[in-house]
Image (cartoon, rainbow, N blue to C red):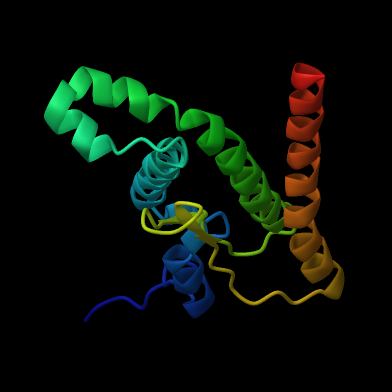
Length: 166
């Protein structure tokens, strides 16, 4: 006959539940890879730079076929004057939402930028996935953080531009 097991040797149901989901388990946003958001950011940066170069009346495809890639790349870089301020304001806006969500311990995804090279701006903006927000103050903070951050960066660019050209 087998001996009965002591009560402390058999695992309690609550112990197995704790082992299955540890308290320190990262949420879905921490597990989410940043590969796609970074790729979309780079594509959006290229798209907005392309649109900025087109605003200088530069047909990049025509320049590349007639004068070569080096000249076309130099002309492409003229689009940075448009792209850098626009992307800085957009990134500040999205990071405002993202960081406020992380501060309030909300399950929030990294910003997903949307490139759109055939539009006037070269982008359709960005989106962030947010799970349920339980507290009203967290909702207000997350919602307001984006516009406040983008307003701060837009003000900085406006001041720098006015100081440069005055």
